[in-house]
Structure formats: C-alpha cells, structure tokens
Length: 222
Image: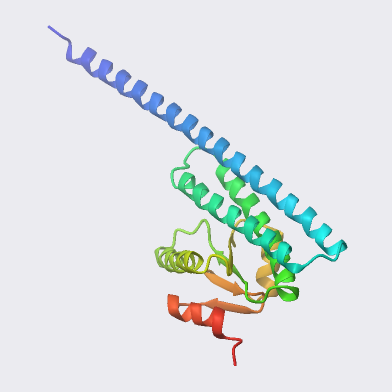
C-alpha cells in the first residue's frame, strides 16, 4: 500500500522539477531572442554609420540631394521594420534586461536619424515628411496604452500608404535618454503620445487617420 505522505512528497518534488525546467528553458529562450535582436540592431548601426559616411561624401563632393534622401529613407525603413520585429520579442521578455537595452539603442539610432532627416529634408526634399512618434514604453496605464495603440495603428497605416513619402521614427520618452529629453523640451512635449511632424508641428490628443494625413500633406498648400 502506497503511503499518502510519500505520494505527496513525490508529487511536490516532481512539480518543482518541472517548474525549474520550465524556468530554465524560458530563460534560455529569452537569451536566444536577445541575441537575435542584438544581431539586428548591430546591422542597423552599421547601416547608419554607412549612411553618415555617404552623407558626408555627398556634401563634400557637391552631389545631388536625391542620393542623400534615398539613403535616409533606406536606413529609416530598415530600422523601423527591424524594431517591429524586436517588439514581438519584447512581449514575452520576462527574464533579462537585454531587450530593454536594445530598445534604448534603437531609440538613439532613431533620434540621430531624425536630426539628419530634417536637415536633408529642408534643403533637398520637402515632399518627404519626417514623423517622430513619442510614446511611453513602460506605462501600465490602460487609457494611455489605448491611446498609444490608436496612434501606432494610424502611423503604421500611414507608412504603408505613403511608404516613399514618410520617414517614421518611433522613440520612447521614458527610458532616461538625455538626447530624447532634449528633443521633448525643445518641442514643448510634456506627455505621450505625441507626433512631431517635420520638426515644426506637434500633434497630441485624439486624431483620425484622415485628419493626420491632411495635416501632413496639405497644411503647406495654398
């Protein structure tokens, strides 16, 4: 006859073993995801460095604006779509801070690209518009999450519709990055979500796709 006490302890030990195996497996999965993400962001950093070098060459050699804007569009799109893939990893990141650090590096890349994009746009291609989307990365506020979800969907749809006319750069406001804090203060942005259009107009509050599209493409038309 099986002793009930022995059965209880055997079941408890078995449960603990399964739990520890699951925890260990989950940890290594997150490490793997972080490694994959880091590879992607390193690729983006190389692309951005390559762009910066080419931009200096174009400027010093007095070449046309078109290659410079093409380089910006290419790098911005690569960083944007690589970051979308990173977000899928972040949804399940419970064991390491690596993905948070990678997100900060992406934001610094995008902040740098935002500065270059506006400079080139002003002198070369005013038909291309630069959208800096500022949001809170760590918020648990339900209402704010809902509003940020609305902004994200609208901006994603805008990028899909006007892919060659929109440079979209999402950047988190709450990751203690000095350069991002400076951008917020310089543009009088005090809360998320917010969109800075072409370095001279800030959008906050509820807005529809059609309203934002009209502001971006029609506000300077007579």
